[in-house]
Length: 44
Image 1 (cartoon, helix red, strand yellow):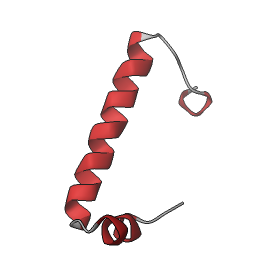
Image 2 (image 1 turned 180 degrees about the vertical axis):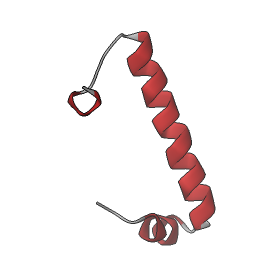
Image 3 (image 1 turned 60 degrees about the vertical axis):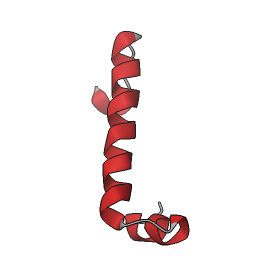
């Protein structure tokens, strides 16, 4: 695991922006998996 603070420091961004980008990416992946009717082991 890598902390959001470390990601922000490496990318030269605010930690809040990194958090928002991660949430958007998670939403995108969740949408793709839903469209494909895929369930993950952690969801069952």
